[in-house]
Length: 108
Image 1 (cartoon, helix red, strand yellow):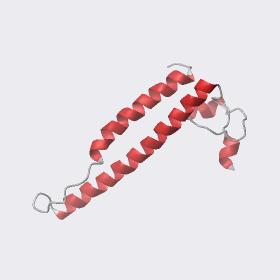
Image 2: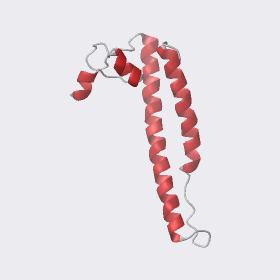
Image 3: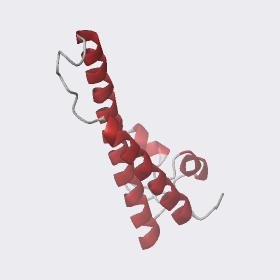
């Protein structure tokens, strides 16, 4: 695994996009034809669709967050808190390479 944040973030972005593509099919509208499915099967399918849609939204948020982190790498501000400008702890960046804030600013 590379220590280069750009490579790490690009790999993460690619993985997130792949997962979003896999999730898109599960979030497709549910057919409500009573002749084709029983009531409980439709309810289960609708619940699965809602969970997939929620996951897809979280993945889109992570994609935007990771893209913003790549922008910070490009402009030289990666590792600096977007709120206060202090350095983000290396352990925090290791846990979430796309984090935009230091631990102190997250607590505020």
